[in-house]
Image 1 (cartoon, rainbow, N blue to C red):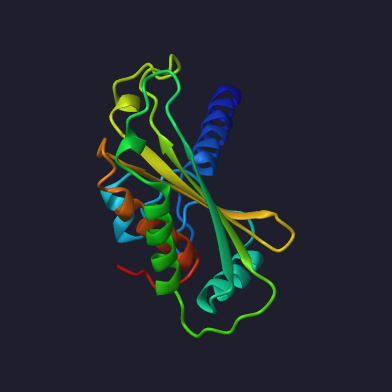
Image 2: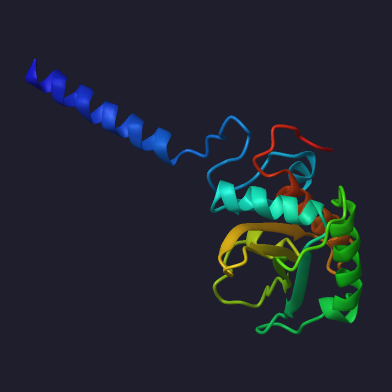
Length: 192
């Protein structure tokens, strides 16, 4: 009897551990962390997203929808292997795409002094990095990371979307997906 009880308790705690660490989406479809599959563009790439404060995210989404945002950008070139991506991709072109996509989220322009801060970068996958040992880690060309900050410069949301083309022809789709990920995060309506 005691042995059966110990087995039951062990199985129960193991099951609880599995359920707590599983990537189970919330009622809005947003996983606590890990790979995102919440909106259609997530299904065509590897996407990660994470929100840090629902209250601040709602305020930030309202700022985006009223045109109150600024952004900065940078690139992270490959260091162990020769950088090639940025022979084809210009940061200024991606900035233009970012600006257009952010403006597409505009509902009604009401400018204020308080702005949502967006920082993003384009990472070139460094296939020569000795830490990348699997074939899978060398398949993608890179990813874009978008970080959204509140007025106190606190990170409130982050998305990372990969791209596969070594010349970066699919970066625009990754940018659109990253911005749409933020714009729809924790909203009941799923957009295409």
